[in-house]
Amino acid sequence: MNNFIFHRRHPEYAANERRWKRSSDAYSGGREYIEQALIRHVSEIDLEFAERRRRAYYFNYPRAIARRITQYALSVEPVRYNAGTELVEDWSRTGLSTNDVMRQLSTLLNVYGRAWLVVDMPCFTGTPSRAEARRLRLRPYVRALSPLKVVDWAYGNDGKLLWALTLEEDYHADDPFSPPVRVRRRRLYRRESWSLYENVSGTVKEIAGGVNPTGCVPLIPVVEPDGFGLAANHWFEDVVRISEAILNNESEAQMNTVKQMFGMLVVSDSFARSAQKISDAAGAAENFSATVARSAAIVESVDEKGISRYISPSGVTTSAIRDENRYLKQELYDIVGLAVQNSRNYGQSAESKAWDFQNISQFLAERAELLEQSELDAWHLMQRYDLDMPMPEIHYNRKFAVTDLASGIAGLLQLSEIPAGKAYHRAIGKTAVELLANLGGVGNEEKNRIINEIKEDKNNESEKYHTETAQ
Image (cartoon, rainbow, N blue to C red; front, top):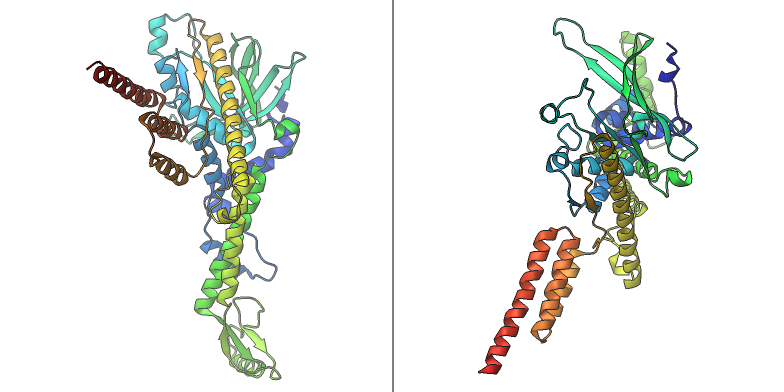
């Protein structure tokens, strides 16, 4: 069989594969990412760079940013009416709930700018009964895929997916007495069918296939409309670049600290020549070091100071690097619209702060709308597999209070001190409940219970007033 199916790449995939992998590595972090992101200086010898590489550590800002956006966007749990409890609690059929899968989708969007939801069914033969299907968990499921897992696709004249090709890898280790086998696979989804191909030692064969009862390709593409939707690179690439700059700067600052502790030897030229002559006469295996590098001795001419001594970088140099890193970190969060304004609140006008908060809230509301529509599309596809499955009604939170919580509470406390009537203070209480709800402090059920308690308090006061008037 022609193995071209194992070499297909969509133009978008081919153009972004290297950047996507870089973003994935930056999100994952660890020693492997440090090895590829650390930059060696032109004047750095092998021994010195090896030491700096071993000492390097990584502040994983890309992961912090990607997760923070997801945490904000899904800080309030979506409401799903008429959704099956079993499906919601295990939407992926691997133990991930609907919320878990949608969190994964949101984070994938943050890292890559593109992600996919795949809706599928387990393979089975015959026509199992309802009880048998329930026992074997033969039901549709949904999983989130990174763009690196969907290698090629095409759209039909109707603007919908015509076919899609996903990448899979399997690891066969059933027999503990035989070596394991890792196989590469490609799954081809068409509107009416699906096929699974396997590549073993260069030989491609179709190992499975079946009917697709949905009548459409069961993959849902999810793209940030202002990213790949406008044929633009994704903003997370800039986050990775700045994060790499911080990594390299921090590595330099760390090595400067080491140099301050141990210093660098400077010897006079006359001493170096004498030492070399003695070394040559004795037939020593090692020559006197004359390598010019940051970790080796520096030789001075007699016309210069001519005094053997240790030198080291000044503390000012290290401090300047750390200041640069603090600046880069602030700009890093500004890029994604998550500036906390920690260090610049004092110089920012009230109008500017309101604009920043509005910008962030709008970004999160758009993300919530995108996630809600993607989840709805997934439920519709699941219903195509199982016509008896009820279609839930889904609502994502779109109110986000991305403000300073301490300032908000302080303002409410000041307002509560105004000597006004009980109706005014009830309004203050409702405002506080809304603030907590927007920040994810209380759920919808608890929020409604608190508001009802406030209303009951009002009714009790009204009854008390009428009783006293009648008396």
